[in-house]
Length: 282
Image 1 (tube, rainbow, N blue to C red):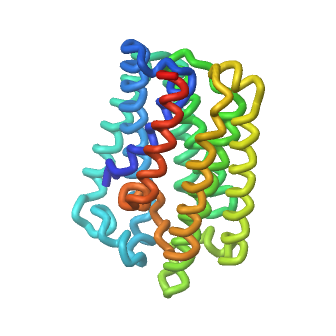
Image 2: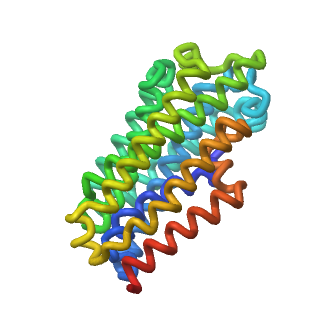
């Protein structure tokens, strides 16, 4: 019910410090780690809330009907207590770090409440809110570490999150096509639109990343004109994710796809390793 496998999304909090070449500072890394924990708690609270709201619809889904609340394994009252405990823990930890982080955490929870009760039923708005959730993680990382978040990071994060959201909806649309209608927003999508939107966003992402690599301001800040080496892994990663989505239909859960696909994991590690070499070693 807490979805610990989805906590990997909260690693976005470390991105501002990573790109600022300051992830090797113990104090800064510690604050980022505590921010990561605070977001894990509030994210799990959101998942509990979502399961409470969606319990009836989840019973019509071949996999989601096995979730603790939908299956009846956990009572509603117990789930509400867990939800309150997670929220309190996240709020306390956030306030300990900074009031700005607390505001971001509260805003994240509020938009997810709106998402759970109404906005997730509106096509395009639903995946836009998913993308905003990723952006809030990045802003939270910048807040707790004191590192400014660049416009490049904002744009690229939003595009990547949008691709993940589109892939998730595509997987859900295929499930609906098999006779399991569990999400109203899917009525605003079809496969041609989802496929085209993914390709468009993927193309824009690759172009934006290449522009980032050749930006004079970025080259000066990083101190290397070899950033374009990392673009090969970005292009490969996006193409692999498109293959998983459009060919193998394996991205109803983007997190599960990342955690299980060795090819994608190797590409991601190569990208991180190459960037780390440019930022911290060279």
